[in-house]
Amino acid sequence: MASSPSDTHVIDKKDKEGFIARRIRFFFDVVFWIAGALFISILIEWIGIFFGLWEQPGVLHSIAVLQKELSWINRDFSTVLGSPAESSVRFSRFMYDTFFVWFGFDLMQSLINADFFAQVVVYIKASINVIQLFFTRLVILVFSLPVFLIFAIVVIVDGIVVRDIRKFGLDLERLWIWSNAKVSIKPLVVTPFIIYLGSPWSIHPNWIILPFVFMLSTALWLVTSKFKKNA
Image (cartoon, rainbow, N blue to C red):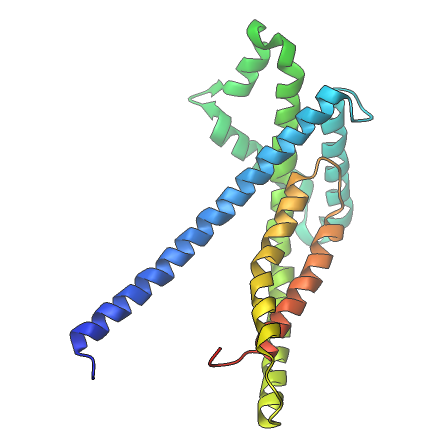
C-alpha cells in the first residue's frame, strides 16, 4: 500500500526529531562524562591526601602535578600553540570564576578563610589546584582534536577505496567486524578524555592522545572498509 503525503511528512518529521534528539543526548553525555572526570580527579586527590598516598604531603602533590603539566605544555606545544600554558591558565581561571565566583564573591576562598572549615582547608586548596589542572588538560584535548580529525579523514577515504575494491572484486562481507568496530568508536572517543582529565598523576598528553588516535583510526577504517549497505 502506497503511503500518503501526510504519512511521509510525519515519518520525515520523526526522523528529523530523532536526529536532533540524538545530537542533544550526545552533547549532554559529553558534559556528563567531563563532569564525572572532574569529580573523580578531585575524589582521588582527597583519598590520596587522607591516606597519605602521595610523596608530597597535603596540597603539595596537586601543586607539583600542575606545575609539571604546565612545564610539559610550554616545552612541547609552544611551537604549535604559541603560549599554551598561559592560555590554559587563563581558560582555567575563566572557568573557575564562572562556577565559583558570583557577583564578586569567591566561594572557594571564603571556605578557605572560614574557621568552620579549618580542618579541611588542605582539601579545598587541593580541589582548586585539581580544577585548574583539569581545565588546563581540557584545553590541550581541544587543541588535539584536529589530530583526530586529520587521521579520521585519511582512514575514512582509504576505507572507502578499500570497500569499493572489495565490492567490485566480489569479496565476502564480514558483518561482525563492521558491527564490533562501530560499537568501539564511542568508547575510543570518550576514554582518553576520562583517563587524561581524571588522572591524579602528571601524564604527558602524547601518551594519551597518540595511542587513542591510532585505535580510533583503526576502528574508523574497519567501519568504512567493511561497511555493508544493508547491514
